[in-house]
Length: 192
Image (tube, rainbow, N blue to C red; front, side):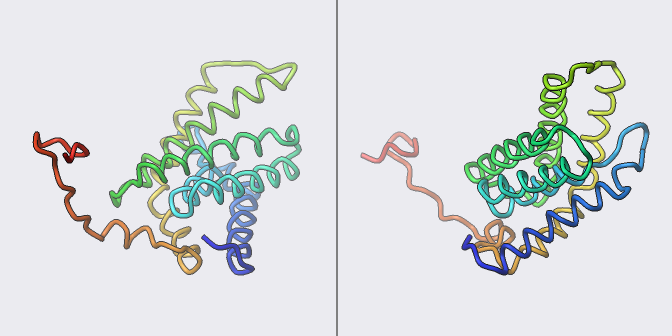
């Protein structure tokens, strides 16, 4: 991916709108005691489509914007989202999920990593932090709700980012690979 003004504008708009939607009321909608969180979904979508470094940047700036707007400990959300974006992006770069349902486990893993890491960081930074079983139930429900929202949200992010991506992820999935030659024992990589 090449960095240009159009690329930065698209990423900035995605980060800004996801953070504003989360702050303005989307995060307050409760379903069965949990809430959907758009921020780790955005970071996971950028990681799947653009790679680890753009996802780490998106995670950092989205987390910083959330920290400044909400008044959390400055940098806690940014730190966690940067790590989540880079980790999910590296996994997607190495494994390159080719299934059309790949956004569901990617979103679930990113959300689970985000809520667990954010809970750990806030527990370490807060003086009067408390842990109850309700927190664990909310973590599980948030992960499940984000998994449900993954397909339409990832499609929206892909549609916004598609003009600036160097490789379209859908075209990569559709392209068939040639079979690799096997060695004398039928083991790949042992060509003698």
